[in-house]
Amino acid sequence: MTEWDAIRRTKTAVTRSTMVRDLRQLGLKEGMTVIVHTSMSRIGWICGGPVAVIEALQEVLTPAGTLIMPAHSADVSDPIDWENPPVPKKWMQAIYQEMPPFDPERTPTLGMGRVAETFRKFPGVRRSSHPIYSFAAWGAACDQIVDGHVLDDGLGQDSPLAKIYQLNGWVLLLGVSYGNNTSMHLGECCSKKLKMITRQSPILLNGQRRWVSYRDWDYHEERFSQIGHAFETDPRETKNLQIGKIGQADSLFMSQRAIVDFTANFLKQGPVHRSK
Image (cartoon, rainbow, N blue to C red; front, side, top):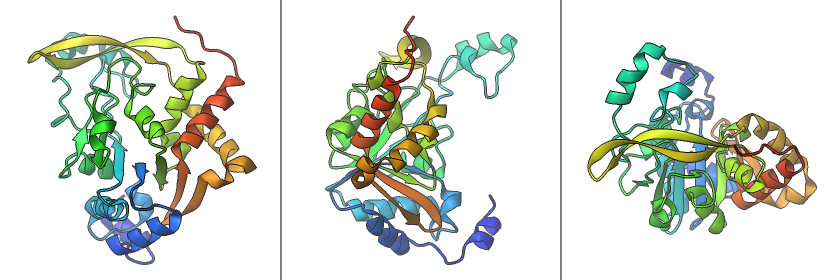
């Protein structure tokens, strides 16, 4: 979307102060731990762009809280797994030889949007070390969230998602829906219904670039919309979900623990995807 399109589709200018108001009305409070997924184009024309979005979130949470965003880089991976789009097989050897290793400071995010990409470079933000599933965090529990992000099971029990769960954190879907809710992958892991697969990525080991293999799960986020609808319509979950708007963006604010547990329980009722 061009800036002209954003202006034309926006009824009232969205500013840091209006977003602060909207965030508080939705339920965000000082001291909370919140993982945020955003679509800037859905918010409307924003005075200050992604910087204003981040500063509004920080103002509401304050340094006593913790702000987390996904900083995933799925392209730092085995080219044989690339499908959107694939690359010619004759390119493979050059990619294996030349692909830069993952670097938390330099590797850009892929497909995370302007807000997440801006956030990873913000003052005081730290990024975890997983080559494809990293997270960026700011605030009181920043170090606790990002430290110790192991290669195996990168969205599972030792991941930043699990640490948000332990802290009774929250999920804000700002202009996006359940298909973008990374926390639901933790629910998939907890369901024990997934197939185990192997991936590889280039990383730095003792200052040397090395391709390393690690265990991962075959995730199925295409099911998340169905699970999310069931979550929204379950009367037992009413206390765990708030629905509102940030600017012009339809937004969802939910207990991360509630949506993770709901996802796990929902999937436990389905067929088992056995590990190899």
